[in-house]
Length: 242
Picture 1 (cartoon, rainbow, N blue to C red):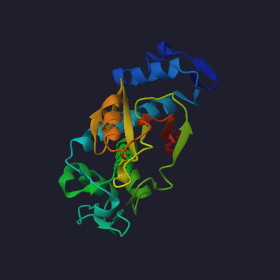
Picture 2 (cartoon, rainbow, N blue to C red; picture 1 turned 60 degrees about the vertical axis):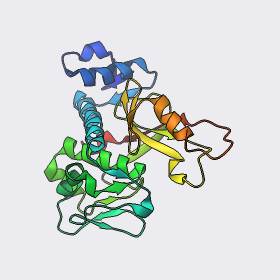
Picture 3 (cartoon, one colour; picture 1 turned 180 degrees about the vertical axis):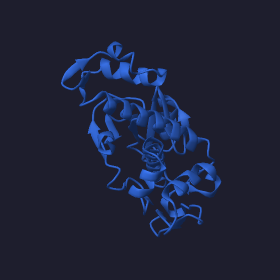
Picture 4 (cartoon, one colour; picture 1 turned 120 degrees about the vertical axis):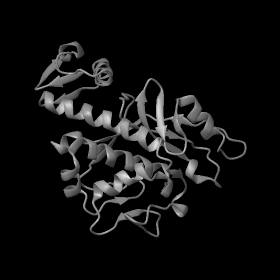
């Protein structure tokens, strides 16, 4: 359910404020869950909806960018904008615009290769840029660092247990019987689009059964447990930007 300024609000009550079909889909799902989505103002809700839409937009763009999947050991960036560190992370070069560098991943994707968790971080940083604008993004993320689940303090990201999945959420497929020779397939981090569609770097935009079947093909001999979608949700703290 949705609560704004301590008042329960039904999705239909927001029809004059929420116009896009994508936003309305999110609102309807919020209203259907027992989980309370609480906001002080309608502007807070609208910003979250914008950020969620931008997350899905960034995921689609990264999927189409030509950026490759690889492990941390073999990861590489465009050297014009990023220094590759020994752990496989990418550190923004001094005097480089953070917004220019992060968007270069979409523009020149073939010059990049990274692991799926770094792919999710890239999606969330691009969504942040789209949501707050270039000037503020460049101010907040002057020494941008892309590596696994490590986020800048100015992009607070939290995890919660639950299955109140919403479009724009980051979800996680677990593969407990992964092949030890391919440990990078122990899990797949994905952006959820709704309607059983997910984007994961390395698997593309697929439904859940396709992702599970793919992960099951990456298991050790004589596996006992199928891959599965976890009851865990990762979300930015949207209100931190307001």
